[in-house]
Length: 136
Image (tube, rainbow, N blue to C red; front, side, top):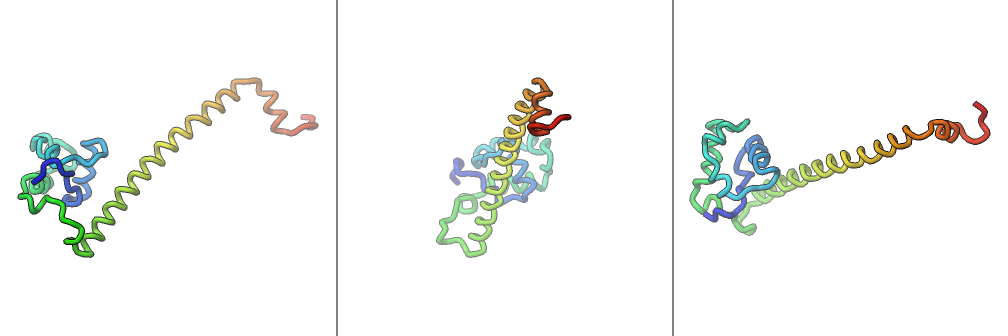
């Protein structure tokens, strides 16, 4: 087993996968990193109970042929499709994260401009909104 390989997140259920990703701040950890976390810590983590911990340990304690990445030529169509779907899910998650962060930053800037305009003389802005020649 190559302990420096990425932990095979597709080998565990989605709840466990999300918990592992949260634990490592969104990045896929190595098998070694996951193996080094004590059972007591995992069991104190939300979504990880004895059954899910056992699934994690099956991966970290597995013989090399179970955790080594098989070459693409050895994968069945179903396995390739599964990997593709997993990668697409990861890509969608990353896109959502980026869109959320971009949306947060784009919301901040207009608010600052609005606040600056709101604190300036309101009369000029009212006249501009009503149009020239309007006698209000």
